Image (cartoon, rainbow, N blue to C red; front, side, top):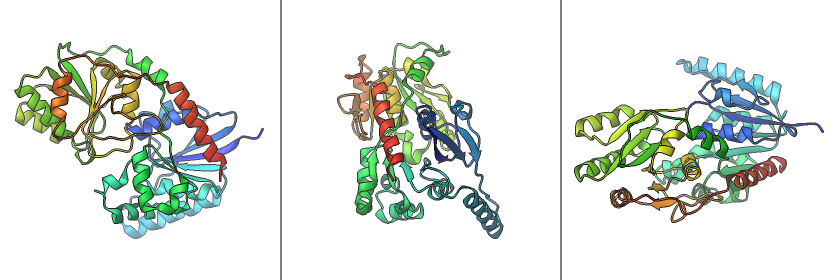
Length: 362
């Protein structure tokens, strides 16, 4: 049987939830059926060596020349060259990095069956401004895609109110999870101080615009002042890392530890007692699934669901700015487990079957 050619375009494979989920997607392809080509704007990142060996990796590097005319001319030549070599050459093409214009271009011209992934809730990211949200997706030429995959029901619902004519193209499929790898990696020993206090772990990008870690630092300070037996581990890096460290230093918050970005953050998650997120908005956090696999209850300020997971009652607690401290204080006084075990082997299988059905359905 002749293998079907699939193209997936993304930005790079550095630290991040999108990058992690892309690696997991590539691990679940049936390479007896598909020849997969991954095209990156930047062929770099800590996960580059984790790509399945059956995948062919290419680079489509755009110009960022400061001269507008030169930049436009170089990028036009690149687009023409790609079209001449790859126009509708693939059976299906997937734009995996929603925010990337070049990735969208590659997916749209390379096949008749074009799929767009939406990993975040852009309506919330644009402060519920319908005009700005529509302008963003119009610029991505969203109407040219055959299928639009969302990782959360909420982001799908919000965009359907802006593009009601596209609702039949929309489907919620959350990211695939390499649960066996997560469990295995979580067993690695790490050198951390033992503590009798409950450990609340934040894992993600240190970016105030979305992750809102100032709220977490305020909770930590209040816990310190009231002698609540809680410590806060912050795993990750990002544009606002220095600002957060300056706040901790200035306010003399002694129960916060910045651990930095880790290719393998799972031993820290396993060592912790709870996962905590203070985000202003999200698509669907990859760390939800990771916490559920390692049986860590979730405390979160965003109530999002996907094709399987919903946090309240089953896997943790949804809080707000006014109740988050009280919940942390309550949980610091007891040991709690998630109330339900998830079978990610079956979940992955169902998700991959649905993705394949979209690749077959023009």
